[in-house]
Image (cartoon, rainbow, N blue to C red; front, side, top):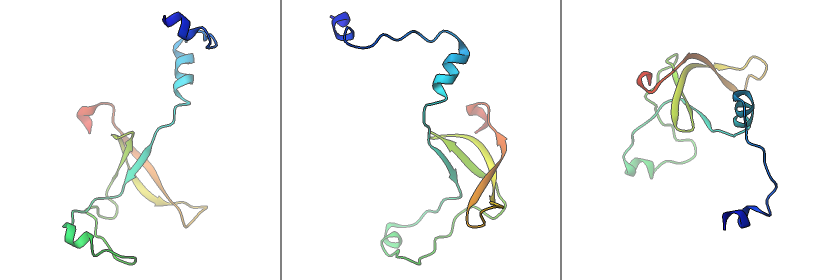
Length: 103
């Protein structure tokens, strides 16, 4: 039965080497987030927010920010203003975590 289902699909050669496998995975899109800080607010305060409202974060200027890839913290870094584009922020990676024990 499975052969019947696969009969109409083009045949694909199996990935054989680590470099070929890495090249295939390199094309998979991932989500990268930089967490500047968090805030805990009561719902009543959230409901009063409007354009121009300010929310204080727990992060202080100069403290490392968290770099998250697909929901996992993988590194930390420092925020900076891009030299060539003063309106944009960037993040300089300062530490990369190798395992879950480090996060």
